[in-house]
Length: 378
Image (cartoon, rainbow, N blue to C red):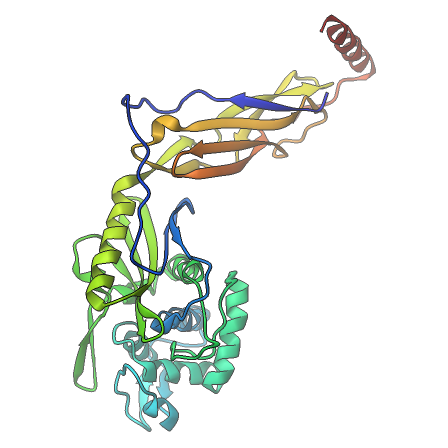
């Protein structure tokens, strides 16, 4: 009674013999993180939780918070915001805003995303919080709310500051949340050029100009950070998010990010093991009106696996059983464990697919007697 049960499930795929797992990949980037957004599978992780200067990739959070205000109505795309002297004097990359002018929110968004304009970024920060330092406080609150665990922001732009840090994992999370939470505004990250004040500038994201399905997000570069990029791309039903930082040149950033993104798409794919409502297995029931209860997943069981390593897939169900009745439909009963080389271990809950009522007094008595005789025979 109440012992751990392990059930190995039959192989799901017909695989060509001799297939080998996908090879791990290294990168010249000091920090790297590559994740499949649909399954959450991490395909590449290098110093991904180590603090680093995020440079202009910081601006993704500033834009996230701008998108929030658009969605809740505090901003409209044609809302005009004033340019202060502080914003106008901001150094680094610029949108060349004019002091004393008013600029539409939509133009400021494009100025930040496409032109990486520090001045446009400060205009937005001041409009949202009154000052850039106050906005940095709001950024840190938002970072905690989003689940960023290794970030601390001192400004809205990524301007060098020894206390202004993030991680590759955190930046990937900001990118994923942007794509998920604001599909109606995400398209700005895919624009390749924008002109303001008669000055036209091209988007610095090198992957936007390659035919590989990339539609965002943001570059970064300072002397301390090196060259970095947070990028996302789609092929079919898959979307990947890549973060690299600490590369030595603009060319290395372009070549290395393209190589890693291509590797993620070509070496891995997503596979449906079970559809929503499928019975995965059944669990033995103790003193119930049914001898077993079907186990179902909460939804579709979709996993990311190396294309060349599927023959090593191992799927099992673990539960403490027999499970005593009564059992309510939807109650968590077991755990589905999925393991494959190059993909680590994934654990998902399995729920009772039906209600199982308890036996009456005589039924419980009969069950106990049967159990006692079964135990004596062992």
